[in-house]
Amino acid sequence: MAVVKLDSGYNIGVKPEACSLVTRSPVSPPKKIEVTQNKTLPNLAIVSTGGTIASRIDYRTGSVTSQFDASDILTAIPELKEIANYRTIPLATILSENMTPAIWQDLARAVFDEIKGGAQGIIVTHGTDTMAYSAAALSFMIDTPVPIIFVGSQRSADRPSSDNAMNAACAAAAATSGLGEVAVVMHATTNDDHCAIHRGTRVRKMHTSRRDAFRSLGLDPIGTVAYPSREVTLAFGAVRRGTQKPALHDRIEPRCGLVQFYPGMSPDILKAYEGYAGLIVSGTGLGHTGTALIPQLRTLSDSGTVVVMTSQCLNGRVCDRVYDTGRDLLAAGVLEGGDMLPEAALVKMMWVLGNETDTKKAALLMQADLKGECTRRSAHGL
View 1 (cartoon, helix red, strand yellow):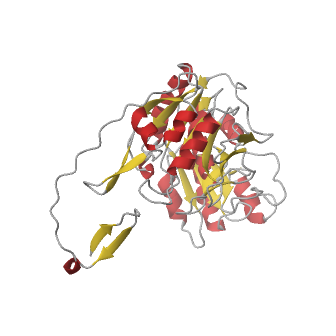
View 2 (cartoon, one colour):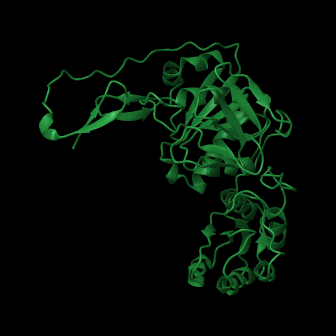
View 3 (cartoon, one colour):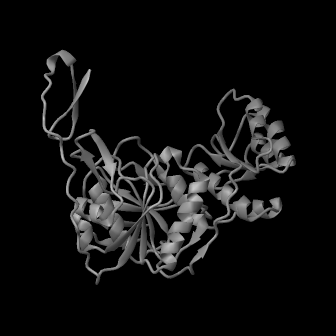
């Protein structure tokens, strides 16, 4: 099957025998256009990890190429010039599934350097698949007086339905707003009417391909950005600009795991985590596993592994004092994870155990609300 790219940006497959070879002159690379920025506007930094805030189709190869230079970005998305001045830092060029705790550390240091250098807001471009993990990681690793906005694109720039330009403009608007925490900014609906601002520790990608894939869980979004007006509205509970003094806490413990319980799961699977510093269990309902797993969980806890229970339900909170299984888990040393999302709990555990070696103190920190990842009570319907 031969793949043909149409003028619309979409691809179709045709039988090879239906194709004719046409010889054309080589395509010259586009000339670089120098863009003048407005020095009276706020100064933002764009730290790229390989996301598609601005990209273009290379018709010589048929691939989409991410752009890291400020001139390239502003040429691709001219609307950004109306919002701020930009300095670009190409930190990494990876698929988001290849993100690692070590790159989180590099990212946190790069972002913190830009904050100390006077940036009035930070935009982090990131692939969408693991963006929630990275946003949670920076939430714990940086105390920030300015907005740190993660943004990505569900659909590449060569597609007519691409969301990259609107997401980028809304992210820039959020980065110049009165926000003072780490957030994810992405389409709030399938229409091009507004983006949602999600707290970095309460957001999850909930769809593989929809433009409004990201959702806040356990609380409403902490703000919105209307489009095309780019008017930012912050919720009452959003952390405001200047509330925190800048600080970097970049130590992290990578020897942590996340396992999801399923019916019939063998206790032997948990043996793979022996020697780990911490383990997050994504249990059923109120935070349960099969009783056959409890002795092995006790073994892990007794050996010094911090074990925390979260729920696969995503909404609501863990309570292991209702059923016998839950009480047995507590007796085995398993900690209740409240309403933390499993992935946010994993990142928090890496950070907590990287900064606190005393397991009792670490346990207290895991159950404390540090960056909005835990709420004291679940709202009705959430």
